[in-house]
Image (cartoon, rainbow, N blue to C red; front, top):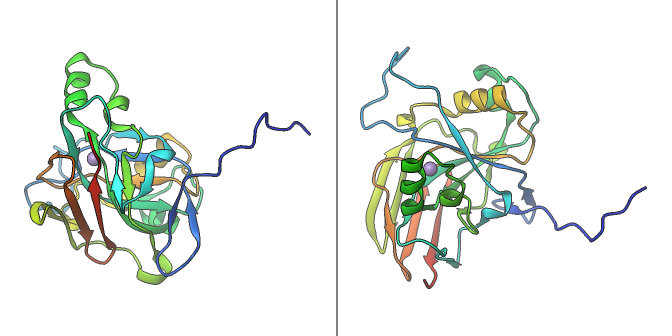
Length: 231
Ligand code: MN
């Protein structure tokens, strides 16, 4: 049997609440805009565009604690607090009705974004990767297993910087619910155990500076606090 040319790194991982176990991270999918300022309408909305996705590398995922690095090549590092869905069961072409059965747990994540680089990418019609997929760009809480806490269909999602509230929304305001996001993603790629999905951020994104203390939380899911490293 062929051997690897060097010992492969261990998979990036996240802690699990009330456990010493680790959740191995495989891939990271992120949903673009997924909250409306308006109350979510019931039923069909002809103006809804299908959700779109971008990705971060798995090792962008780090524990949201201590100090998170301020990345190079940006003057505009933005916070986006998001519900993170941890997939625990493989699936392809999953129906919305069966989608939640593929969720292992949930976490509170920050989709850190080099907004200035993203603005240039948008203008030039270039990919977002360099704006979204840098080192430590996906700090995340420990995961709360579905087996312990079920599925959070609603509940406040918020973020404070140095004690001042910047973002607040409710999971019920997501344009695309978790079950729909999973279903859509699984029509395009085979979802696998270990995949994470960052499900989009409510209004109020803004810039972080070195030394800032970031607190964030989602009702029924968890809370995080970390500081931003030196530029
Ligand atoms: Mn985001």
